Amino acid sequence: MRRFTQGLYGYAVALFVCLAGAGLFLLVAPQSREEHIPRLDYSITVANFGHTVPFGVWAPRQDPPGWVPNSNRIAKGEGGAQVLYLGYATAEREHAMFVQSNEQPAAGFANRMTNTDKTQGTRQIGGTTWEQRYREDKKQRSLVRVLPDVTLVITGTADWPELEQLATQLQQRPKG
Image (cartoon, rainbow, N blue to C red; front, side):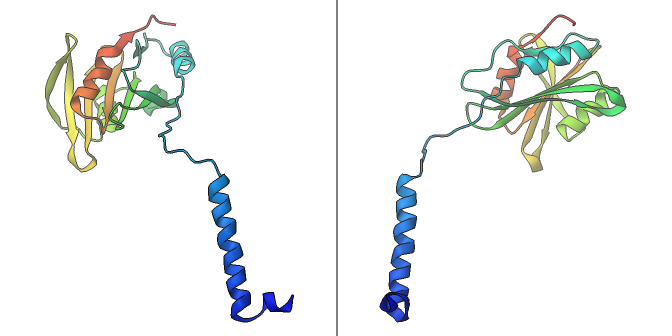
């Protein structure tokens, strides 16, 4: 037994045992080469948000093809206003987020969500006008729509056509 635990021979045996153990672990451990993005259902979050705000909530009729909803939450905004966040991994595996709130002033809310106060024109999407913003250092594109009772923001690293895809899916749900 002493021969296996001392000197260069003992070191080589110990190294072989460790490498064999690591190889066995890699052989037995489950491995996936497929992408896995957790899908989170946001329907309950949207319904709960609708019960707490005095306006009709906006939400996608359906998710754009290939998109994975992967985050949702309700948070407090400035002045106690409620804010709904719905996050997505897009078909191109970029990030997009839909945010809405009745926070006032609407311009301050939009500036905070888009990380800029600079407008770069407008876009017509599905018959409605959206304000377009871009923050280059974050590669963040944003679409903003200010309505009388709510501000809608679609933002993220997704390109303009993908953000437009989400905008075309939005519909207002009845109050309550």
